[in-house]
Length: 466
Image (tube, rainbow, N blue to C red; front, side):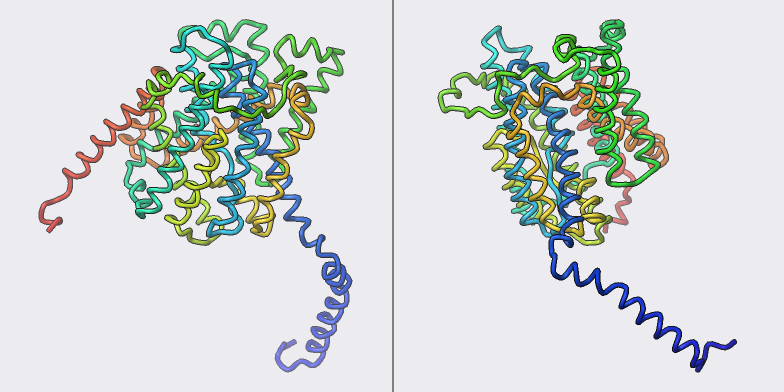
């Protein structure tokens, strides 16, 4: 039967449209008179991101403080949690994309953890508070300088210059960052620093049982996240590790005091507070000479932060189908990190994963960032004692998971995206960072970048230049 000038078909279409309107009317009426229902996806998305980011921020803070200033881990966590709120709200409120989400970044934090460990080794035996204040000064100085670098790049409209860095060198740095996150996660869970010269200590039965399950969990979580895409997968799996941990605890009838004594929990923090004010007199406790001795490492944080920011911004542009005003974003991010640095926060900027979740589930709303900021305040309401029940395996697993994601992206997938020579450059930088240290890897990266520039420039014909 032809669909042209068919009265029966026309009446059927009109009737269907009328029924659809009648069916949808109650929902529209409720939504119109109960605006909160329209905010449900926004609020729930902000809550999910907030929970994941709080757990991850605590993990990054533990990575920096746990092995370097153990008595002040709770204070360090509190400073970084509280210090993350101003840049989160400032950057997200002024970003050219209203659904942007900012959080503390893993790559700068992983480098800071290595620098902090080096500073602690170089410091003479002293009171623990001196070590803690020195680490806080390192974090604040690095974040402040990174913010200043962002601000200058944006003010002089130099954001595009970072794009001229050889991509294999950047990939090598990011792969090395993934390695540091993996080894850092092992250290958080086991309390033993990863070392090729002393691998045997990590495989002692009482140490091995602390970190091996987290490594396995992180591997399977990476497989699941690469196969399935859903905003609730990551928080669900993180909560699942906590439930599984305490399920085993319940089944084995192990007491909390025993778990804490055996090193399974982050605490105890029974007499500690999450935030304690720092006084001007504390400046006298800072070992500035130890910090300045690692100026090269601080400079590497600046480089990695700018490059990673640009990579994240480019990825966000593709996801949200909106072009950033890159220099504006650099200026806003710079000021946000200046504020964060003054409060002792780690480097923060646009997060690709969080922003993608807000775009898909949170209607691209700025309100998500305010909900997330509210979640960052919750740990202060429960106090440091609540953190005593956080399993180290959860923190280590999320660190290793993100480390694996770096290695997957910049080692496995890089095999299909780079030439053989470029891939060798990536592996060389990774191996150098893993075997000798991040500064040595940075040095090799700089030399490699110069070499690649000379090789590429030598291939340009003089006739083509004219």
